[in-house]
Length: 352
Image: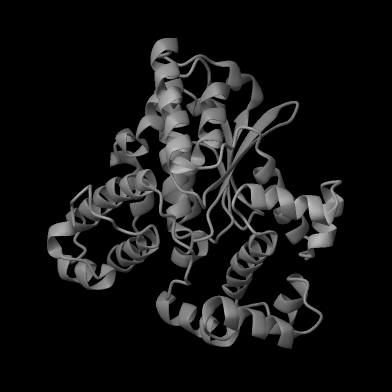
């Protein structure tokens, strides 16, 4: 599948974190039989960079590696198996901050607050109701590998919570936005919970009372040290401080409006009880453009809907809030450098 172009993060820590994760992923792919020559050709890198944790491998290379494994390992749970063997060290200082957090809630709030250290395009939310908490996650590249990276990320997070907080029995549901790559029972055996696909967003649903559970390795000095380091990294590399989660609330509202085909900036501002100008200023304070945030979600939903062969182009245009299919076709050509029909044909070829 062709990957659409995305703006690249360029802060030094992001490159290092991405490279370590990529080196681990490439090592696993090679061990499972993906030809080294294929990896080199697809990523366009020197052979010496394959397992080099300091190599500047791009974030957009992750879906390429996943697609190669999917082609080489049809029907096998490689996303889940990769999560089992990936070291927690790929999270860097976030690993320590989470591992030594006083409670599950503190750990999850740390992940949400410092998620830009992992990727400045990663969206994480923690929402609580009277009975459950929902850890939602989304990345603009989720549709580039049919949801494989989303499955790996969710499985790795699940493993983290189980090993550090013994939460296996507290995970009640797992939600994915994409279609399943495997038989449903393979997912439910791994997660030990109900797994649903085609949901509005990816999420782990946790029993709310489990948020107060302490870590097995809780250590305030180590937790505070890791958090202080992350704060310094934010300051030194110009990463936004996401403690107030204002930008995340904007993204959540975009996704909620998108579920009913509403992508207008004015409607978003109304939903957030802000003036349009205030909302644009808020996005700008975090280095974002409101129009790009709206388009990013719309483009991702367009590609997800095009993967459904039962939906016509005109129906997809309507679901995305367009007045006619011509406007949708023009927008999609701008996002993906190809027509919706050609993109759908590419999906059919890749899945055949």
